[in-house]
Length: 155
View 1 (spheres, one colour):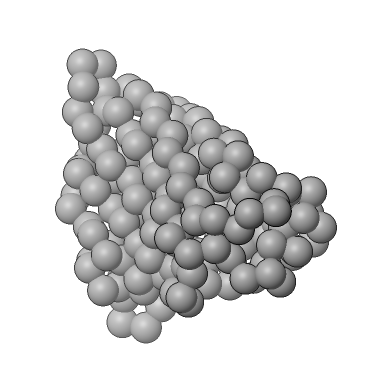
View 2: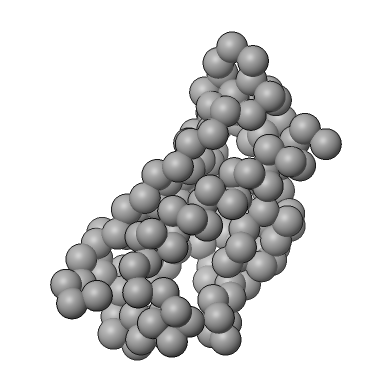
């Protein structure tokens, strides 16, 4: 972690379910804990009741002994096509899910882009949790998330 650079990661998986079914699972933020190894729970906040551009939700995250909350804002929401949200703060990442109908189901693409490096105190907490390569850790988490999405959609 000697160079503090922006982070980006992308993972994809083909799942035997429709784009609309998968979108509905992903955008039900109350189910995030069933999929993500880092975001343990989430709920819509304020007047937000679902995945609409401008809606906000509170996410509770955990990495090692570190726990924190965020309140992302939905930046794209087209049922069966794309769901995207931006985590606040000057360095907050943008998370995106794309749903592409293919033979036998849907190719789901999950990506994360963080254009500015995380502050030193966040990088320190990550190292304390055993994460020395955040991009690799994010990629591993995304792989788990999409495997869990597959399990939920095809159960």
